[in-house]
Image (tube, rainbow, N blue to C red):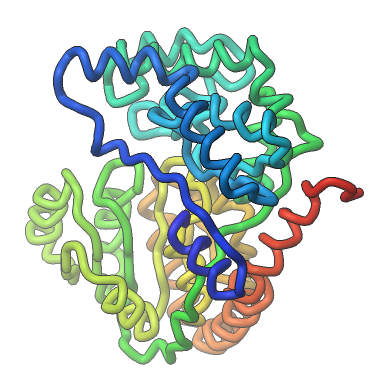
Length: 372
């Protein structure tokens, strides 16, 4: 979303100066990794670099998308010292969960939210590493003690009300968190759903519920399933589909243009996630394509999809319920037509480039000096 919002702002005539550091630049040697670990809670190098940049450019606002691990929260203090308001989009749950995803063992986990971070370290929640998780937890504890997250960020952007509630319970200041969903910078185009297939788009891993999806499709004989994405479970899932003689096609990773073409043609999109999603881009793209959605009633997916209006929910990790939901949706063609109209209207009102720009500019204005 960093690149998308940069281009959105530039397209509207705003001057945008970027400060980028890539995690791919982290060296593989022990000395380099120790240096990153030491700087993750508070990077003096970032402080110096940003102070220089802010002094030269004098921006009206600084908008951060990710500071972990190389930039670090010291970036906020540099902006405050230069009297530049700070906005931080929270694309994950890193500020309340060292692992960032609120999941363990492929299932949702809130054990550390508002409590000790020790369980995350014990369970190696960041990249299955005790040391890495300890660094992430140390960053949180250090900056909580300094009141960095409370004092140095003027506005947090949560993607959903569900996400905001989790972040408030985790200790972030409620009065500084606004909800603004991810939007698109280009219209994906309206489809007609004439392809006669269901679509899954995402990572082929346990928490995405793809195993549940394949098992459910044993009971969905009338609708082929097309699976787009790659991941560690692909081989196992393909073998499962072959053994059960299920009508499933695995396309692997595909270019975005092809994915959008599939969305415009599909009958419905299935989102069987068994983890807390943020706000999946695939969901927003589906709305833009006027594509009905069948999704797990879990986390943000339980909030952003309204039953009967945008599609239908089913309980997570329940293949029988998933199959029943899909079969009921396919059987009601009049409802699918109505849902297609609803989804396109919702996209235009809330997720289109014009809506995304308006909401982002409004947040920037709210943190400028003199704003009420």
